[in-house]
Length: 116
Length: 113
Image 1 (cartoon, helix red, strand yellow):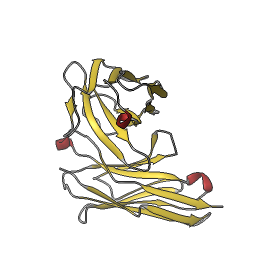
Image 2 (cartoon, chains in turn purple, yellow):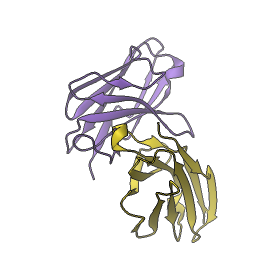
Image 3 (spheres, rainbow over the protein chains, first blue to last red):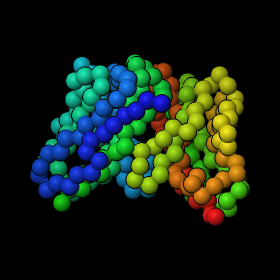
Image 4 (tube, rainbow over the protein chains, first blue to last red):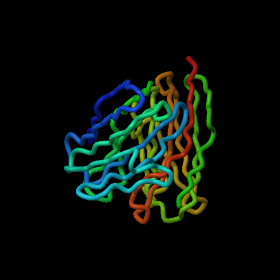
């Protein structure tokens, strides 16, 4: 199956700093990538849809100025958590599917963010 | 929008027993139903999927059934093993929903040796 990588796997930062998370499709091109947030023992919460070459589409309740998404190429999307606070601590996971409008999604390994 | 309900939230079985996890969906336009397995601290892994043009799909010890009329689909795991212990998520998506999957809340499966 297709491979999606994510970096970093774990990050600890101080409150007020910004953190960038990268999501890469390694062996395929992805027009669309999805960013999720997962709290312990809970399901995946879709944050936004990252569209290559255009603005991301954010889900209701997700602050676009807080969670900046850039999808500059067909293999890379980045999520930047700006001015992070302890309540932003979570497991962030991206997913991608091959080509456009694909239903089969492959997930990255996730990034554990801890904001002190 | 789509709404996916998943039951049970926790399932405990003895090694060798079968496990069944059930999901219902609300949008009749949904046509793709994947199942993901997520081990603690790791990524969700696609284990099996089914599309609306078939009623059943099997892959070794894992099978998925789909009832479009009733809008429900189920995951069946036979001869469970301790390594099957994980959280399982069902999902549903449709072309009209831009293929964005709607996930169930997850089922924590515990297989006791």
